[in-house]
Image (tube, rainbow, N blue to C red; front, side, top):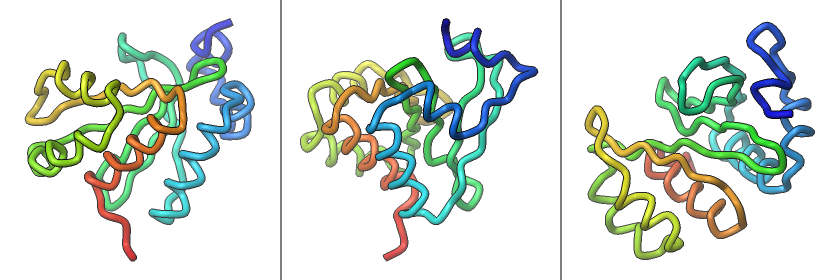
Length: 142
């Protein structure tokens, strides 16, 4: 059963149900890091977007989206937008990222002045790259 089928629009999942469905330590790693680094609470929202319909988890800080997480069985996708403000810094950061992230960034077309990266989080290295990109969006307070 897909995520979309398991939790239709009328059935909002709890954060614990989302965690159980994904069943990945990478999910816990990103959520824990984001919540503690930015002192924020995630919000589950439903989307009818054709690219990734269904319930997702959004992290926002000061009105800016840090990332949106799209659940899947055993894994998840993180949407991180690199805006025009972060573009130059992102170019400097890319050599420290995995080949996957560099290729994804190169293929991403500009949309509304930014690059929308749909990142399939499959291992620790990709997870660390996602964190780097989130830090570009909003620098954590020391």
